[in-house]
Amino acid sequence: MAPQKKASLLIKNIGQLVTMVGPVPRLGKAMSDIGLIEDGGVAAAGEEILAVGKSDEVQGHVELAEGCTVIDAGGQVVTPGLIDPHTHPVFARTREKEFEMRLQGKTYMEIAEAGGGIRSSVRDLRAATHVELKANTKKRLDTMLKHGITTIEAKSGYGLSTESEVKTLEVIREMDMIHPIDLVPTFLGAHEVPDEYRDRREAYVDLVINEMIPAVTKDKLAEFSDIFCEEGVFDIDQSRRIQQAAKSAGLTLKFHADELASTGGAELAAELGAISADHLVYISDTGIRAMAKAGTVAVLLPGTTFSLAGKQYAPARRMIEAGVTVALSTDCNPGSSFTESLAMIVTLAALQMKLTAAEALSAVTVNSAVAINRQDSIGQLAVGKLADIVIWDMKDYRELPYHYGVNLVTQVIKRGKLVVGKRS
Ligand code: NIG
Ligand code: FE
Image 1: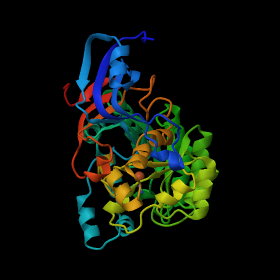
Image 2: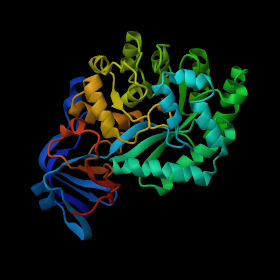
Image 3: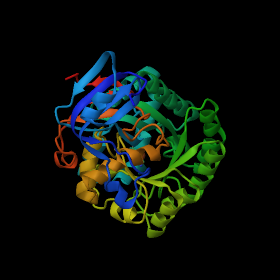
Image 4: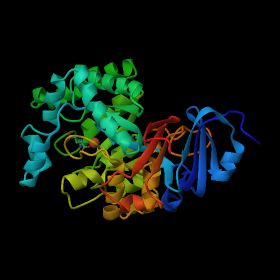
């Protein structure tokens, strides 16, 4: 039966249409199922998908509205818009000097302990105006969009005072309103202990709990609460206190866990019912089992290991075998991973974590959607979901990890509108 609504967008002649239709989340062997349709087509009405199937069938079923955008994909690959579930996009200045210091032998933690790292970004962000931060953030978002990312989770965490954390979350809210990319806000007041609290760290924990969490929840500036749970930053007890307070205030929990050492962060995330635990390079076997049981998503960030020139990557295969939901993200930030390319992350996941192209695609679409609680609207090309769509200069989806270091995106559609590239 013909759909009632008329199509405002039609993409026809798709060589491989990766719909990702199937179980949500994708676990274990199901990660290899990408809902592939050869010679596919997809139509949207306004922001939503109206029809998906074989190109001929879709064209035969939908009626085109006046002025409908018609794109001939010319046999290329089409996927859902990529979802980046862990980013730190609001910062005032880049930190290339630290990158060079690391090349000369200093470690990330040594730089941090000497007052650089996150704390130097905090000094920069506090001095920056809303207008400056918006301009800087926009630049990053524009690059992400050109690389096929249509939704991100965006963290605060370079303010570390109530005022500057609120300022950051306001910038995230404003960018969500004016930029095609959808931004999902996370409060990360516990990203580091700022300069003025170095000798009274518990007082900073109290400030996060008693002042910052109430301030960011009052105006619903954040949906998630994250913490850098790591040796030398926030220990397990402090992390538990902060995240319990955040949960009581209605925030959903996320963790930076077991990134540089095994501290039991994954176990704590599972125990507190976190939606995700991220990094997990040094996760223990107990942590893996706990996350699988709790349904906590593992957001893996191989760009961070790569950019810090680490030798060990998160044990993705063991997690997949244990039934953990695995997602992938850029961790875009000025310190440990400065990239806006999820395709690059897919290449690293393939080479360093042995994920296939299909598994990695599951990890940057459906499973990323689950990591930010957006599985009802994005991550799959299915009727009624948002028309967030990427057209790639590839004939076979397996080129994605293989053809690296260049941007293969030709067109991006966000909420049914062509926002990158041209009609063909
Ligand atoms: O995810 N690990 C903590 N936070 C970021 C790094 C932030 C920075 O260095 O500015 C991360 O790697
Ligand atoms: Fe991070």
